Image 1 (cartoon, one colour):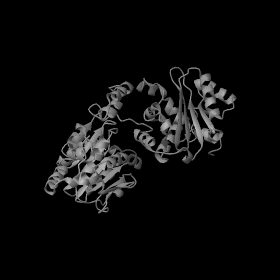
Image 2 (tube, rainbow, N blue to C red):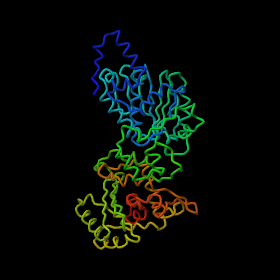
Image 3 (cartoon, helix red, strand yellow):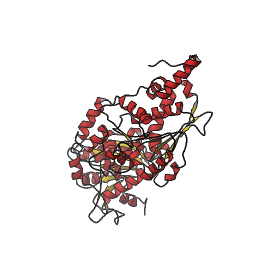
Image 4 (tube, rainbow, N blue to C red):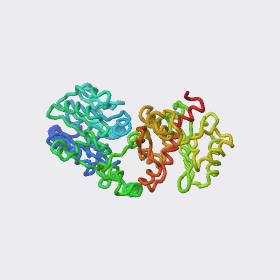
Length: 466
């Protein structure tokens, strides 16, 4: 632990020299003012922003390798050492900003040296200098495709743009950011997990742009922030030759573009948001995927935009599963019981469905192969569940409660891919195709169980839609 520096005890002539050191050396500043010692990868990112000739740095990173902390350290160094500095922190969605980098900035602010901490006010969406709040600040700005001009008009002598999860920011928005970097001490830091093989962020890493952007890769393997146990788990889950290993661990772009229905960014935001049960408006519905063979049987409960329940049963006997579900239903307070249980009623699940119906449970068939309600545009019922779930993730700011954050649910949600049918309708990849890509998972049971809660046929039956 670094001993706290008392600025009031430093002699005036030595104080000036000390402040110069803090100005020039962001790693020294981080250690002695923020009480954080960056690892070698983070130090390279922070130093490169100031030292690269064009003042533009692009960072692709494995998940958890420390890019958010590197950006946060840089932001505080810039704010504390550059007079009337202006920092614009942007991402494609507000959830990304409030769910990841803003909490990190808050932690750093809480633990930083009082001399600098007392200079700034930490607010809900801005950090402002107490004496010059309108000209010296860090501010959040969302980069939405429909409103690129929200980033226009920003100019200052000391200005820093930090673009988090840059692969999701539209190219037009980056053009506006570039147009704002007109002063000598203006900088751009772009960071992202490298999931897309197109767009502004991807282009920044093309060989032709090496002189335009400092290109940095942060890997989980070289990160002091990532435990070896996590790397080993990722190796077992994905395999070293997979695109997921490349993106999530190595911080490299995938070899092929994936077309996930639910993106990792959507899941990240749903996990970081907060919502209490009492504040969750909406119907309570359970989706039930009855597993066969090695596959688990899974129950996922959703109340409006809150996923609050995940149960898994490793039994091969579907009647045992029915018994567990009946007990789960019965012990749930009557006012909190689901109005419908959407049950996979095809094949292995058919017997379970009819037995639950005999027991008086409010079951509704979830037949994946049925025609979609919106059959003109969507191939079948399962595709429609997925389409409705995607809309929910995009539009309703859903929350996956801590008690529902089962690792298998979180892992499976981004893995199922969309397809276009031969007659040009939205479809979902076949289970056998999924199993070929993910032999260790086999079947996306957790994905399917949540998707079933969006069964429009079921909503028609219980009178929720007409």
